[in-house]
Image 1 (tube, rainbow, N blue to C red):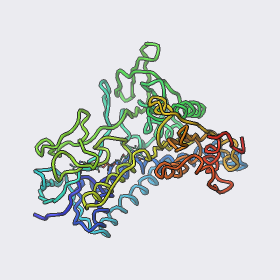
Image 2 (image 1 turned 30 degrees about the vertical axis):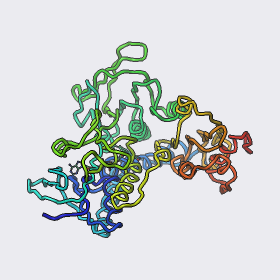
Image 3 (image 1 turned 135 degrees about the horizontal axis):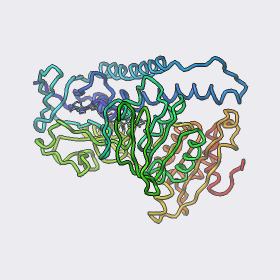
Image 4 (image 1 turned 120 degrees about the horizontal axis):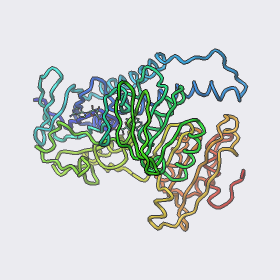
Length: 466
Ligand SMILES: Cc1cc2nc3c(=O)[nH]c(=O)nc-3n(C[C@H](O)[C@H](O)[C@H](O)COP(=O)(O)OP(=O)(O)OC[C@H]3O[C@@H](n4cnc5c(N)ncnc54)[C@H](O)[C@@H]3O)c2cc1C
């Protein structure tokens, strides 16, 4: 039996990044992954393929509807969906293959098969052909991630009624598509197929979109997406969804209490994700999970069993790739006796629609609920020179700062490239900066980042261009 300083189970962004960092720190590392391609949900069927489709469908929609306003008339343009899907697959392959290369470079041993914790210090890996390998481990890191969840009444057939796993790979643009769930995955993949010509209806249980995001962003997003042609049915409780003779049929109770039925060629169930620990042997190893199936950990990523650690989607907190990565790095640094740490207040959250929506820190609703006094400055993209040049003036940036100390508590942006712009705010929050710090920092002109500066200036009512 080969023995390692660390055996990581799961090669998603949490697991593979942890494995590489551990190798950098001088540990001998094995990473067990049941799928042939490394990179987990994120690289195989999540962040990366969805962004490849969002980028490609944006080019299509922009050329169809936006370019003419900027003096570029595109004629004879047509959608080549097989080529778009091939582009997506090539992007996935480049990224997953890149992780293979990084494992080789860092001497991380890759073990293909399903890992089970037989006991603390011992992982048993079963390959697809049934062969079994035993690995000894000083430490075991559980990074088994998550899978799509569903709700009672929904019959997922993996075809007409499916999850994001299917919606990143429809081989025809559906005439109609119903998206169950108005969260990030539903909005992103709904946008892709809407841009390519599908009539998309989003059915959401709450009276708003994107639960947990700042309410002002959510209502701005609702208006913008509605203007783009996506239909929204908010405050609606889905009763059932199924493949009824080749068509998707979704039955729900609307906000007035009336039963409604929608039919569509495709139904995307995007109601959230749940931790994945099937077959991992947690119970036998004595590792505690909470009532939502998440592996319980302390503030240092240790489970209740010495030598077994957990990170990423399989533990509490936001289900985001970069959160999993930060936790992976911090966990192995702690194993190595270093001061690994994750600042959860500074983890950005991005929805890659058009415009993008990005947030870091506390929302206004959270500050109000916690009774924290705050000042607010916001600035719209329509007064920014670069946004005008891009013909992308929808949205605004909002900076929330403590009323007395001026420390930045939250930054929320809806607008072009918000996902890039939020990086500045994450650094500011991580470094405990004040709104004054951003307001006094020179931002290149003409860039979209000036909107963040102006929003920071607006905290003290001194925005220049409004
Ligand atoms: C459509 C979609 C779009 C997304 N877009 C974004 C985005 O833009 N940005 C973002 O930050 N997040 C995004 N996410 C979320 C992101 O993918 C997850 O937060 C992230 O992948 C979690 O990383 P992880 O390492 O914890 O787990 P995962 O990526 O889920 O990886 C876990 C791995 O463990 C393997 N595994 C599980 N059990 C075993 C076992 N017993 N033995 C061996 N291997 C096992 C699985 O096969 C998997 O490869 C998206 C998700 C989806 C579905």
